[in-house]
Image 1 (cartoon, rainbow, N blue to C red):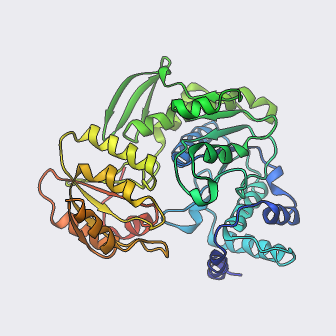
Image 2: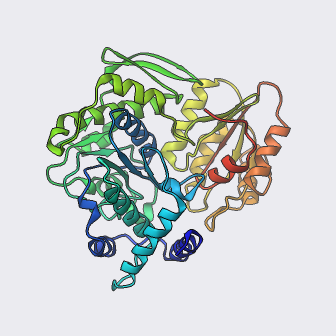
Length: 423
């Protein structure tokens, strides 16, 4: 296969949807020589914050001189973003060559691996053959039955925040969802958790884990350009604004401390506080309270579940108290749309809606109707580019525009939105 043919192969697999379970991916990996066993790993599960936490960790480990493979999903702008080594995507020819070998192995299997299982196998195969020192692996959904949950003892397991999402697969309570995500923890692993609320902390009583302690943070100064803070007595700066980014940075630092305690066991080098400072300072993670433009101020946030909408509303209220904001919203119809509107509309002066480019996309016209019924002005603009252009064209001096509701539109927006840059 060439690269275009490999894209067609994956697109055909997407019709399989999500099929939880490990039999197919384990069979595929066995046929490929079990590459998942050849590189030590950090593994992360959770509803929100996985990408940001692992990005902080990644930059620190690269600063330490390690060869770091990283696997994420979904990609935002470019398909090959799913796989990177020290921040560099594979060449198209590399993806095509690996996909060709994987397809040959799949054709001999009794079952048919999904697109995500195939992409997961590609990650393990590429990282092993490129002799990475360590790999950072993000669960796609859940944990226990996620295709990434095929590794033995890991250097560190990380639990990001847990919220109501994918309930049809993971369960209808946060406790059930948490139990699924804890399924990544194997015998001998150490688990680091993001800050937990009282309800989930109670649920974890009796389990061995290292919780992120926000009491270690002091001297916090926040602006839209980033945040400075002390972790114990060490000063740090991150480029991402907001309380959520600060908590994700604290979780990453906690995970790196546990990494240091276990590094020798996996024949890895430790990281210094200076490396942590430099790595966090360099980290940028697109799509999370991301400033796209300064005038008018445009903020992009991929919040797409109830906890993320709640945290976004808190950030916006903190940075822009007593101001009505302009929202550009598109959402998938299988999400908790009423929860999104209840959370965000109290901050809204007007809303421009669009239909996400996804088979699951909710019609922008229907979303606009629901918003108007809630007493807020709303216009449907069809697609995200037109919606953003309308918001920009109608903006007054000092206006704040917030684009949110889903991750599905971000690639189109960042590729075609015409923004001068982001930081």
